[in-house]
Structures are given as structure tokens and as C-alpha cells.
Image (cartoon, rainbow, N blue to C red):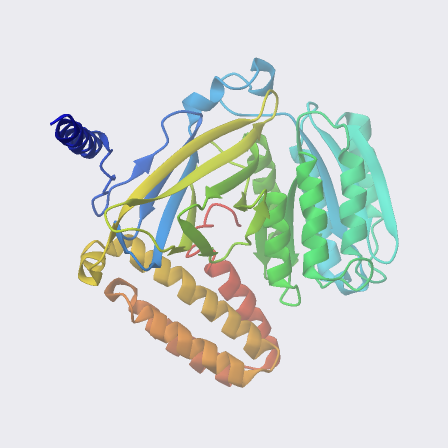
Length: 461
């Protein structure tokens, strides 16, 4: 009898434990199509929206769209009064204009560059500081000085004396600009202007992007402005991305004056710096971030975003691969935005979303948010278009054709992205009949145009 009671008691206890476990076990969060997860605190607001709210137990692909916005009113509370002028965001700035004066800048390019540099000097106020760096084979530096009537006259004289000669030493210019801004007050910004490809110093994209990153890690923003169709567009985009600044493709130097003016405005209002979007990928693998470069830090995937200006959103599209998981559980993806203000401690905002793990592929398909999915498809397809244009530019017509075929197939995966197939046909037709010079210019324009599809519409000129 005693033994029977013990067994019955044990069975009852086990049953009760199982019941309590079922009752108290949190139910997995299952987002509805179109639902947006939002960060709960912080001056930077993060919105996260998955393309699917369910994934298959054996894994699968989906997109996630992140929108990162510095909220104007909230941001004011996080900065010292000296950093923000009354009535809005209007910071004192320290600039280094790093100007290519290699031989290819001779003629009208040099004349336009002088005109733009003169205009930049006149736009700055006596709160600001400026250094002027020029690079060809040789480097020249007009040291950083507060703007005053005397320093203005000195900078104007140095600009008038600029002459184009020699090779293209972009890394030397970046390092000289970095040195010129060390210890500078206010918002620090290095503006690189070049019309060519590096020929001396560091010349590979990876080396130069790493250098731009080191400058940025020193709380200096790097903007990269390319003039003329001979620039390495991919390099200049990478430099600006890793440097937290803006990218601009200028068909000719005549528009440089306007762009430098806009750059001054951006420098005064970009108050969140060293912005990094970091992913907790316990249940997912970050497969691709179209139009951006993925880095890794402490085992986590990290993206470097441009400096944030109040109420100007940055959008990021991420292609994810879900890992194998048990049916009935929830796969979670967390994200953190880390950033630094002009003054004060580093800041962070967090957001996460979860999707259900299911066994039926039809449930996965039914959970699709067509708007996010089509934007993801559009971004990946646009990446193929840009790669095809670059292949055509270097004479690889077979590779270009294959990439265009891939892009066309991708656009066909979503009804909302079908218009991309017409663009594929246009690229195939126009590049096929264009001269080598025309292909260069069309490639640069396509690179710039596709920044919007990559979510970088507020990161370029």
C-alpha cells in the first residue's frame, strides 16, 4: 500500500509539474504581417519589420527592414547646452577639406575646385575651424585655424595658389586630414574630394576603407565626394560608409560648390556619431545587407551607419537565414544601435522581434509581408544590376549578362518588384550599345541611383 501511494504521489507530482510548466511557459510572440517592433527608450528610435512572421523548422530565408531615426526633441536632452545653439541643431564644426590636386584635376576641374573651396571658406563662421589639405604626389597642409578675417584671407590665398600635378595619393590625404583634426573642437568632419583612383600609397579598397574606419573611430566623420566618371565609385561609397559620412557622385566639378555647402549643413546638424547597428544572431544568420558592408565585432554582425541628423531616417534591409529550430518555439532577432553624442557618454537603443517556427511551408508563405519582401528583393536585385554594370565597364560581357539574368529572376519573385525587370532590359540595351566612356558614366549614375534601393537615400548627394 505504502509503495502504491508513493508511486501515485510521484505520478501526481509529475503531472502537476507538467501542467504548471504548460501554464507558465511563455507563449512565443507571433507578429502579424505588417507589424512593427519599436525600441522602447533612447533618443534613437529603431523600428524593425520582418518580411515573414513564420519560418520553417528546417530554416529558410527572410528579410528584415530596420528604420533608425534620431528623434529631434528627445535628442536635445542628451547633449550639453553648449553643443546645440538655441532654436535648433546648429553646431560649431571643425573641417578638413582634403582635395585631390593630381594631374587629372587640371583645367576646368581645378578651376571649379578652387571656386568651391573659396565658397566653403566663406560659409564658415568664427565659431568654426578649417584645415586645407591637398594631395597629388606631394601633400600640402594649411594647418587648422579658427575662422577670422585674417585666416579667411590666408585660406583664400592658399586656394588661389592650388595647382594640379602628380599622382593620386588618397591615403596620404586621409592621414593628413586626420592629423589636422586631432584635438579639434566641435563636430569634426573630413571632406575628401577626388576625381580618380588611387595610384600611390594605399591603393586597395579594403586598405583604404580600413583607414577611413580608423579615422571615424577617432570621432571624425569622413565624407567622400567623387568628381567625374573615372572615379572608383565602389571605393568612394565604401569610404563614406565606413567613415560615417555622405557619398556624392558629381558628373563634373561644377556642382562641387553646392555640395560643399550642403555638407556644411549636414555637419552642423549630424549629432549622433559612430553609429553602429549590431545584431544578436542566436537564431539567425545575417546572410547579406545589400548595398552595405558587413563587419564583425565580438562575434556579432555589425553595420556602420552614417551620422544621424534629427528626424532624418536611415533604412537598412537585411537578408537573413533562420537556423533549424523546434516547431512551436519562437526565433528571436535582437538589434542594438550604439552611438556617440558630441559630448557625454555613449548611447544605445534596443529592439527585437520574434517569428513563429512552424512545420508547414504554406504557413510561412501566408505570413509574408509583401511590402517588406518586395523591398528586400528590389535591393538584392539592384545589387546585381550595379555589379553587372561594373562587369560591363571592365569588358566582362558574359559576367554582366549572367548577373542581369540573375537580377531579372529575382525581380520576378515578387509582384511588387516586377518593374525591376524592365530596368534590367534597359540596362542590357543601353550598356550593350554604349562606348567605353559612356559605360563609365552610366555605371556611376546607376551606383548613385541605387543608394535609394539600399535604404541609403539620406546618406548621399
